[in-house]
Length: 123
Image 1 (tube, helix red, strand yellow):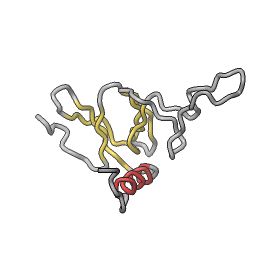
Image 2 (cartoon, rainbow, N blue to C red; image 1 turned 135 degrees about the vertical axis):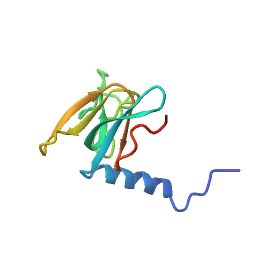
Image 3 (spheres, helix red, strand yellow; image 1 turned 90 degrees about the vertical axis):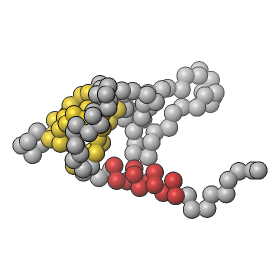
């Protein structure tokens, strides 16, 4: 028995590569996924969207009048952000057609891809 012997750390490398690729300004395509699994094109976008409640600063504070470390606080992600545990709302930067981008707020489930896809797939 015992613990698995991990030698190549491929999943770690994949996670690192994905985070590094997300850090690049890349064109993506954003779709809404309806209840029937059909995708509907929303916009040509930049990046992969950001959960609505993502924060730049730690959302929790250590509160102990004695200054003792009684609790641990959430740590920020390698990208410097404090990501939510669970949220459906998303901000997406949609291309405005004039060379700029506009933030679009969405509460339905989104599908963001680095390549265009058939927006009616899944029928």
